[in-house]
Length: 131
Image (cartoon, rainbow, N blue to C red; front, side, top):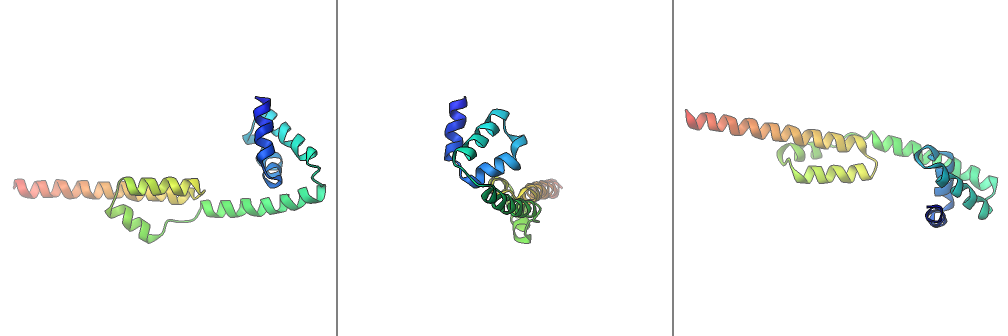
């Protein structure tokens, strides 16, 4: 397993290693973090470079958090309402992959509203036809 960590960490950029060590260490096994620390030392990354990366990563994290909270556009709400099903759910997966958690949740929610709307319409039409 250790060799796998070494291989993975060697492929990461300095910025990725700094993020893993200083910001995301709780998301990784201790062994992975220690291998990342060894890799940073092996590459002889200076404290100035690390500080620069840390500032840039902090800005990236703020940007990611803002992106995660973006609301769903009206056009996508309408699309999901009138065309519920596979397309909105696939699109919501793409939003999740890009960190837009709120958009993904809202898209699935509007798709469910669409299913409910069509279900009510079918029941109403059946009621009218049976009458």
